[in-house]
Image (spheres, helix red, strand yellow):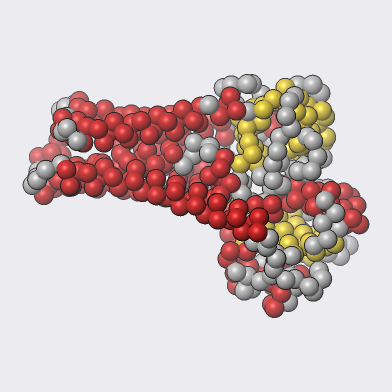
Length: 447
C-alpha cells in the first residue's frame, strides 16, 4: 500500500450522495406515515372512547400498519436498495416485523385486560369468527418469525423457505384485515374506513411492483459454465438485448423462466466495464446444481442490479481500498478488482481473503495476473494450514488485521468492503472499529 492516501470526492459523487440521502429520507418519511398515520387519525378523528377500547384500536392498528411496512421494504425497489443498501433494508424489515409481532401480543393483552372474560376468544371452539381470524393471523405471524430464526440457524431449502415466508406473511396480513372487517367498528367509522382503504392500496401497490419485477428482468443466454472447483462454478451470460448495467459489487436475481419459477440472488462477479455478466455460484444446492449443468445457449433471466456495496456508489470515495472476504464472499471483490483493472485505476488496493484450506482460495492465478496491472496486494489467510504453508494462518481477527492494514494514521483514509457469512462480517466489522476505522468507511454485504 502506498502512503499517499488523501480522501478525494468530486462534484458528481457529492451530488449522488445528496440524491441518495434525499431518497432515503423520503422513504423514511413515507414509512413513518404508513406506520403512524392510522394511529394518529384514530386519536384525532376517531372520536372520544374509553381507555381500554382506545388501546385496543391503537395496538391493532399499529400491528396492521407495521405488517404493511414490512412488505414495502422488500418489494425490490432498485433505487432504494442502491441508496440505502440491501443489508439496511433487510435489517429494517426484520425490526418492523418484530414491532408488528410485539403489537399483536400487546393487542391480545389489552383485550384480555379490558375484560378477563375475553380469554374465551383464544379458544377455537367457543370463539366467534372475528377471534378465529385473529388467532390464525397470530399463528401465521408466529410462523414468519420462526422461519426467520431458523433461517439463520439451520440449513434449509431456500426456495421452500422463501415461499413459506411469503405465504405466511400474506396470510397474517389478510387474516388481520378480515379480523378488522368482522369486528366492524373501525370499518364503520367514516374517516377510519378510508385510512384502512389507503393501507390496502399501499400494500397492493407494493405487491404489484414486486410481481412486475419479473417483467423487468432482462433475458440472457449462457455463453459458458466454468468449473472453478468441485463446489463452485462461474456462469457467464451474454445479453439478448441491452447489456446489463451494474456497479461492481452489486447483485441480481437469477431465474430460468421469464416469469414465476425458482429464483435466487447472486453477486455479479464480472467487470462492470465489459458487455456481459458472470455469476460465481456455490453449486451445493439444487438450484446451484442446475446452473452448473446448464448447456451453452440456455436462457436465463436476470432481475437487477440491486445493492449499494460498490466502489462506484460511494458518496465520497477514498483514494485507497481494502477488501476483506471469506469463501464465496470473494465475488463482489472480484467484480471490483476486475473493473478497476479494466479502467487502469491507479489507487492502492488491499485484498484480504480468508478460507478454511488453500484449496478453497479460488482465482489465485487470476488475482496474480491482476496484481501486475494494479497496485494490488493480496493477503491470504487459512484457518487450517497444511505443512509448508508460509502465509497467514488462523482466524481473521484484530491482531492479524492490525498487521496487514496501514498504520493507524492512514486507516481512516481507506474504504473497507467486507463480505462473507454473517458471523465473519460481524467479527471483521468489530475489529475494524477497534482499530479506529470510521464506521462510515465500512461497507458490508453478507450471505
